[in-house]
Amino acid sequence: MGSVGAGTKILLLGKIYHAPKTWEALSELGELVYCTATNRAEFLQQCRDGKYDGVVAIYRTFTSAEITGLFDEELVSVLPSSLKYLAHCGAGYDQIDVHACNARSPIIRVSNVPTAVDDATADVNMFLIIGALRNFNTGMNALREGKWRGSPAPPLGHDPQGKVLGILGMGGIGRNLKKKAEAFGMKVIYHNRRQLSEELSGGAQYVTFDELLSTSDVISLNLPLNKNTRHIISKAEFAKMKDGVVVVNTARGAVMDESALVEALDSGKVFSAGLDVFEEEPKIHPGLVSNQNVILVPHMGTWTIETLTAMEEWAIENIRSGLEKGKLKSPVAEQIDL
Ligand SMILES: O=CC(=O)O
Image (cartoon, rainbow, N blue to C red; front, side, top):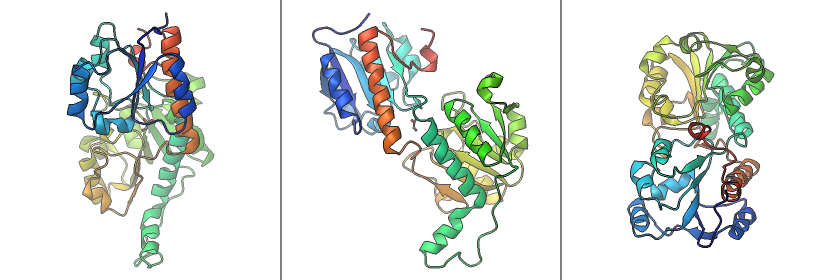
Protein backbone atom coordinates (compact mmCIF):
# COMPACT_ATOMS: atom_id res chain seq x y z
CA MET A 1 0.00 0.00 0.00
CA GLY A 2 2.98 2.34 0.36
CA SER A 3 3.65 5.11 -2.15
CA VAL A 4 7.40 4.90 -2.19
CA GLY A 5 8.96 4.54 -5.58
CA ALA A 6 11.55 6.09 -7.80
CA GLY A 7 10.66 9.73 -8.34
CA THR A 8 8.71 10.07 -5.09
CA LYS A 9 9.02 13.59 -3.73
CA ILE A 10 8.02 15.15 -0.43
CA LEU A 11 7.41 18.91 -0.41
CA LEU A 12 7.87 21.20 2.58
CA LEU A 13 5.69 24.30 2.75
CA GLY A 14 6.84 26.39 5.69
CA LYS A 15 9.69 25.51 8.01
CA ILE A 16 10.68 22.67 10.32
CA TYR A 17 12.24 24.20 13.43
CA HIS A 18 12.30 21.48 16.05
CA ALA A 19 12.37 18.10 14.36
CA PRO A 20 14.94 18.49 11.57
CA LYS A 21 16.38 14.99 12.03
CA THR A 22 12.97 13.34 11.76
CA TRP A 23 12.26 15.39 8.65
CA GLU A 24 15.59 14.51 7.06
CA ALA A 25 15.02 10.84 7.83
CA LEU A 26 12.07 11.00 5.42
CA SER A 27 14.66 11.20 2.63
CA GLU A 28 14.84 7.39 2.76
CA LEU A 29 11.27 7.45 1.45
CA GLY A 30 11.54 10.16 -1.16
CA GLU A 31 13.39 13.23 -2.33
CA LEU A 32 12.81 16.18 -0.03
CA VAL A 33 11.91 19.27 -2.04
CA TYR A 34 11.40 22.84 -0.95
CA CYS A 35 9.19 25.67 -2.07
CA THR A 36 11.00 28.53 -3.77
CA ALA A 37 7.93 30.67 -4.43
CA THR A 38 7.68 33.92 -2.53
CA ASN A 39 3.99 34.52 -3.10
CA ARG A 40 0.79 32.73 -4.07
CA ALA A 41 0.80 33.68 -7.74
CA GLU A 42 4.30 32.32 -8.09
CA PHE A 43 3.43 29.10 -6.27
CA LEU A 44 0.35 28.54 -8.44
CA GLN A 45 2.43 29.12 -11.56
CA GLN A 46 5.14 26.73 -10.37
CA CYS A 47 2.48 24.07 -9.82
CA ARG A 48 1.00 24.68 -13.28
CA ASP A 49 4.48 24.49 -14.81
CA GLY A 50 5.03 21.05 -13.25
CA LYS A 51 7.77 22.12 -10.82
CA TYR A 52 6.33 19.89 -8.12
CA ASP A 53 5.34 16.93 -10.31
CA GLY A 54 6.13 13.70 -8.51
CA VAL A 55 5.29 15.17 -5.09
CA VAL A 56 3.32 12.50 -3.23
CA ALA A 57 3.20 14.18 0.17
CA ILE A 58 3.16 17.77 1.37
CA TYR A 59 3.99 18.94 4.89
CA ARG A 60 2.54 22.40 5.55
CA THR A 61 2.47 24.86 8.42
CA PHE A 62 -0.11 27.46 9.43
CA THR A 63 2.26 30.31 8.53
CA SER A 64 3.07 28.88 5.10
CA ALA A 65 -0.24 30.47 4.08
CA GLU A 66 1.64 33.79 4.12
CA ILE A 67 3.22 32.56 0.88
CA THR A 68 0.78 30.13 -0.71
CA GLY A 69 -2.45 31.56 0.66
CA LEU A 70 -5.24 29.20 1.60
CA PHE A 71 -5.46 25.64 0.30
CA ASP A 72 -8.73 26.57 -1.35
CA GLU A 73 -10.37 25.16 -4.49
CA GLU A 74 -8.11 27.17 -6.79
CA LEU A 75 -4.90 26.02 -5.15
CA VAL A 76 -6.01 22.40 -4.72
CA SER A 77 -6.90 22.28 -8.43
CA VAL A 78 -3.30 22.97 -9.48
CA LEU A 79 -1.55 20.63 -7.04
CA PRO A 80 0.38 17.85 -8.80
CA SER A 81 -1.71 14.82 -9.78
CA SER A 82 0.84 12.64 -7.95
CA LEU A 83 -0.18 14.18 -4.59
CA LYS A 84 -1.79 11.77 -2.11
CA TYR A 85 -1.08 13.14 1.36
CA LEU A 86 -1.30 16.59 2.86
CA ALA A 87 0.02 16.75 6.42
CA HIS A 88 -0.92 19.94 8.23
CA CYS A 89 1.21 20.81 11.27
CA GLY A 90 -1.56 22.11 13.50
CA ALA A 91 -4.83 21.12 15.07
CA GLY A 92 -7.10 23.54 13.23
CA TYR A 93 -7.16 22.92 9.48
CA ASP A 94 -9.58 25.64 8.39
CA GLN A 95 -6.94 26.85 5.88
CA ILE A 96 -7.56 23.67 3.88
CA ASP A 97 -10.66 23.05 1.77
CA VAL A 98 -11.10 19.36 2.58
CA HIS A 99 -14.12 19.23 0.28
CA ALA A 100 -11.88 20.21 -2.66
CA CYS A 101 -9.35 17.56 -1.58
CA ASN A 102 -12.13 14.96 -1.52
CA ALA A 103 -13.26 15.98 -5.00
CA ARG A 104 -9.90 15.02 -6.52
CA SER A 105 -9.39 11.59 -8.00
CA PRO A 106 -7.72 9.95 -6.19
CA ILE A 107 -8.57 12.08 -3.18
CA ILE A 108 -5.88 14.00 -1.34
CA ARG A 109 -5.78 12.60 2.17
CA VAL A 110 -5.42 15.31 4.79
CA SER A 111 -4.14 15.00 8.35
CA ASN A 112 -3.92 17.43 11.25
CA VAL A 113 -2.23 17.25 14.65
CA PRO A 114 -4.67 16.58 17.45
CA THR A 115 -3.77 15.69 21.08
CA ALA A 116 -0.23 17.12 20.99
CA VAL A 117 -1.69 20.65 21.12
CA ASP A 118 -4.14 20.04 23.95
CA ASP A 119 -2.12 20.90 27.07
CA ALA A 120 -0.42 24.02 25.75
CA THR A 121 -3.62 25.41 24.25
CA ALA A 122 -5.70 24.62 27.33
CA ASP A 123 -2.98 26.27 29.46
CA VAL A 124 -3.27 29.51 27.48
CA ASN A 125 -7.02 29.14 27.68
CA MET A 126 -6.83 28.95 31.48
CA PHE A 127 -4.42 31.90 31.57
CA LEU A 128 -6.96 33.94 29.59
CA ILE A 129 -9.85 32.84 31.80
CA ILE A 130 -8.05 33.84 34.99
CA GLY A 131 -6.60 36.98 33.42
CA ALA A 132 -9.99 38.09 32.09
CA LEU A 133 -11.91 37.21 35.27
CA ARG A 134 -9.41 39.13 37.39
CA ASN A 135 -9.14 41.80 34.70
CA PHE A 136 -5.39 41.95 35.18
CA ASN A 137 -4.76 43.79 31.92
CA THR A 138 -5.71 47.24 33.24
CA GLY A 139 -3.34 47.13 36.20
CA MET A 140 -0.52 45.53 34.25
CA ASN A 141 -0.68 48.23 31.57
CA ALA A 142 -0.83 51.01 34.16
CA LEU A 143 2.27 49.64 35.88
CA ARG A 144 4.25 49.75 32.63
CA GLU A 145 3.20 53.35 32.19
CA GLY A 146 4.71 54.13 35.61
CA LYS A 147 1.27 54.59 37.20
CA TRP A 148 1.24 51.59 39.55
CA ARG A 149 -2.40 50.32 39.40
CA GLY A 150 -3.56 53.45 37.60
CA SER A 151 -5.96 56.10 38.70
CA PRO A 152 -8.74 55.27 39.24
CA ALA A 153 -7.58 51.78 40.31
CA PRO A 154 -8.93 48.96 38.14
CA PRO A 155 -12.34 47.56 39.07
CA LEU A 156 -12.19 44.48 41.28
CA GLY A 157 -12.11 41.18 39.40
CA HIS A 158 -13.90 37.91 40.06
CA ASP A 159 -12.78 34.57 41.45
CA PRO A 160 -13.07 31.47 39.26
CA GLN A 161 -14.22 29.39 42.22
CA GLY A 162 -17.90 28.51 41.93
CA LYS A 163 -18.31 30.12 38.48
CA VAL A 164 -19.97 28.25 35.63
CA LEU A 165 -17.64 27.69 32.68
CA GLY A 166 -19.46 26.91 29.43
CA ILE A 167 -17.21 25.13 26.96
CA LEU A 168 -18.41 25.34 23.38
CA GLY A 169 -16.70 22.47 21.54
CA MET A 170 -15.66 19.51 23.65
CA GLY A 171 -12.79 18.11 21.58
CA GLY A 172 -9.33 17.39 22.95
CA ILE A 173 -8.67 20.99 24.02
CA GLY A 174 -12.13 21.47 25.52
CA ARG A 175 -11.83 18.27 27.56
CA ASN A 176 -8.33 19.19 28.73
CA LEU A 177 -9.57 22.66 29.72
CA LYS A 178 -12.42 21.09 31.70
CA LYS A 179 -9.97 19.31 34.00
CA LYS A 180 -7.84 22.42 34.47
CA ALA A 181 -10.86 24.63 35.16
CA GLU A 182 -12.18 22.19 37.74
CA ALA A 183 -8.86 22.46 39.58
CA PHE A 184 -9.69 26.17 39.90
CA GLY A 185 -13.09 25.33 41.38
CA MET A 186 -15.16 26.09 38.27
CA LYS A 187 -18.32 24.13 37.42
CA VAL A 188 -18.12 23.00 33.79
CA ILE A 189 -21.00 22.64 31.37
CA TYR A 190 -20.55 22.07 27.65
CA HIS A 191 -22.20 22.07 24.28
CA ASN A 192 -20.95 20.05 21.35
CA ARG A 193 -22.34 18.84 18.03
CA ARG A 194 -22.79 15.47 19.68
CA GLN A 195 -23.17 14.68 23.35
CA LEU A 196 -20.12 12.81 24.64
CA SER A 197 -20.12 9.60 26.64
CA GLU A 198 -19.98 10.09 30.40
CA GLU A 199 -16.41 8.82 30.35
CA LEU A 200 -15.24 11.28 27.68
CA SER A 201 -17.07 14.27 29.12
CA GLY A 202 -15.69 13.46 32.58
CA GLY A 203 -19.12 14.15 34.05
CA ALA A 204 -19.49 17.68 32.65
CA GLN A 205 -23.16 18.51 32.10
CA TYR A 206 -24.29 18.60 28.45
CA VAL A 207 -26.53 21.58 27.68
CA THR A 208 -28.11 23.08 24.57
CA PHE A 209 -26.34 25.93 22.80
CA ASP A 210 -28.87 28.43 24.16
CA GLU A 211 -28.54 27.10 27.70
CA LEU A 212 -24.79 27.42 27.50
CA LEU A 213 -25.16 31.03 26.38
CA SER A 214 -27.66 31.98 29.05
CA THR A 215 -26.22 30.19 32.09
CA SER A 216 -22.42 30.49 31.77
CA ASP A 217 -20.39 33.00 33.77
CA VAL A 218 -17.46 32.36 31.44
CA ILE A 219 -17.83 31.14 27.84
CA SER A 220 -14.87 29.43 26.22
CA LEU A 221 -14.77 28.84 22.47
CA ASN A 222 -13.02 25.58 21.66
CA LEU A 223 -14.62 24.53 18.40
CA PRO A 224 -13.08 24.26 14.94
CA LEU A 225 -13.75 26.92 12.33
CA ASN A 226 -15.77 25.71 9.35
CA LYS A 227 -18.76 26.94 7.36
CA ASN A 228 -21.14 25.89 10.15
CA THR A 229 -19.24 27.59 12.95
CA ARG A 230 -18.21 30.89 11.30
CA HIS A 231 -19.64 33.70 13.48
CA ILE A 232 -21.47 31.17 15.64
CA ILE A 233 -21.15 33.85 18.32
CA SER A 234 -22.60 37.07 17.01
CA LYS A 235 -24.95 39.88 18.07
CA ALA A 236 -27.93 37.61 18.80
CA GLU A 237 -25.83 35.22 20.86
CA PHE A 238 -24.30 38.01 22.95
CA ALA A 239 -27.84 39.19 23.70
CA LYS A 240 -28.63 35.78 25.20
CA MET A 241 -25.61 35.81 27.54
CA LYS A 242 -25.61 36.83 31.21
CA ASP A 243 -24.78 40.46 31.90
CA GLY A 244 -21.12 40.68 32.84
CA VAL A 245 -20.12 37.45 31.12
CA VAL A 246 -16.46 36.72 30.35
CA VAL A 247 -15.63 35.41 26.86
CA VAL A 248 -12.46 33.57 25.94
CA ASN A 249 -11.30 32.33 22.52
CA THR A 250 -8.31 30.13 21.69
CA ALA A 251 -9.96 28.42 18.68
CA ARG A 252 -10.12 30.66 15.62
CA GLY A 253 -11.03 34.33 15.51
CA ALA A 254 -13.79 33.92 12.95
CA VAL A 255 -15.95 31.65 15.12
CA MET A 256 -16.93 34.94 16.73
CA ASP A 257 -18.04 38.16 15.06
CA GLU A 258 -15.33 40.50 16.36
CA SER A 259 -17.38 43.65 15.78
CA ALA A 260 -20.23 42.18 17.81
CA LEU A 261 -17.75 41.39 20.60
CA VAL A 262 -16.43 44.95 20.56
CA GLU A 263 -20.01 46.26 20.88
CA ALA A 264 -20.78 43.84 23.71
CA LEU A 265 -17.61 44.94 25.54
CA ASP A 266 -18.39 48.60 25.00
CA SER A 267 -21.92 48.22 26.33
CA GLY A 268 -20.69 46.32 29.41
CA LYS A 269 -22.67 43.20 28.45
CA VAL A 270 -19.31 41.43 28.37
CA PHE A 271 -17.20 42.21 31.46
CA SER A 272 -13.92 41.18 29.89
CA ALA A 273 -12.47 38.94 27.20
CA GLY A 274 -9.34 36.89 26.64
CA LEU A 275 -8.29 36.30 23.05
CA ASP A 276 -5.49 34.30 21.47
CA VAL A 277 -6.98 34.34 17.97
CA PHE A 278 -8.44 37.01 15.69
CA GLU A 279 -10.59 37.23 12.61
CA GLU A 280 -7.92 38.70 10.35
CA GLU A 281 -4.58 37.85 11.90
CA PRO A 282 -2.28 39.67 12.26
CA LYS A 283 -4.76 42.56 12.07
CA ILE A 284 -6.57 43.23 15.32
CA HIS A 285 -9.86 45.09 15.50
CA PRO A 286 -9.00 48.59 16.87
CA GLY A 287 -11.93 48.29 19.28
CA LEU A 288 -10.15 45.37 20.93
CA VAL A 289 -6.77 47.06 21.09
CA SER A 290 -8.23 50.16 22.72
CA ASN A 291 -10.33 48.25 25.25
CA GLN A 292 -8.42 47.71 28.50
CA ASN A 293 -10.79 44.93 29.49
CA VAL A 294 -9.43 42.60 26.83
CA ILE A 295 -6.37 40.42 27.24
CA LEU A 296 -4.72 39.98 23.86
CA VAL A 297 -2.25 37.20 23.03
CA PRO A 298 -0.88 37.01 19.45
CA HIS A 299 -1.89 33.40 18.62
CA MET A 300 0.55 31.68 20.99
CA GLY A 301 -1.59 28.73 22.08
CA THR A 302 1.02 26.14 21.12
CA TRP A 303 4.05 28.42 21.40
CA THR A 304 6.30 26.20 23.53
CA ILE A 305 9.37 24.19 22.63
CA GLU A 306 7.85 20.95 23.88
CA THR A 307 4.53 21.31 22.10
CA LEU A 308 5.87 22.62 18.80
CA THR A 309 8.42 19.80 18.76
CA ALA A 310 5.70 17.22 19.42
CA MET A 311 3.54 18.77 16.68
CA GLU A 312 6.29 18.67 14.07
CA GLU A 313 7.17 15.09 14.98
CA TRP A 314 3.49 14.14 14.71
CA ALA A 315 2.95 15.79 11.33
CA ILE A 316 6.08 14.14 9.91
CA GLU A 317 4.85 10.81 11.28
CA ASN A 318 1.69 11.31 9.24
CA ILE A 319 3.79 11.55 6.08
CA ARG A 320 5.83 8.49 7.00
CA SER A 321 2.69 6.53 7.78
CA GLY A 322 1.10 7.58 4.48
CA LEU A 323 4.13 6.66 2.41
CA GLU A 324 4.88 3.40 4.23
CA LYS A 325 1.40 2.11 5.03
CA GLY A 326 -0.86 4.01 2.65
CA LYS A 327 -2.70 5.40 5.68
CA LEU A 328 -2.35 8.60 7.66
CA LYS A 329 -1.95 8.39 11.44
CA SER A 330 -4.47 11.14 12.18
CA PRO A 331 -6.76 11.83 9.21
CA VAL A 332 -9.07 14.84 9.56
CA ALA A 333 -12.59 14.17 10.79
CA GLU A 334 -14.14 14.53 7.31
CA GLN A 335 -11.96 11.70 5.96
CA ILE A 336 -11.94 9.24 8.85
CA ASP A 337 -14.39 6.91 7.12
CA LEU A 338 -12.88 7.23 3.63
O1 LIG B 1 -3.71 27.29 16.16
C1 LIG B 1 -3.06 26.31 16.32
C2 LIG B 1 -3.41 25.01 15.80
O2 LIG B 1 -4.42 24.91 15.08
O3 LIG B 1 -2.68 24.04 16.07
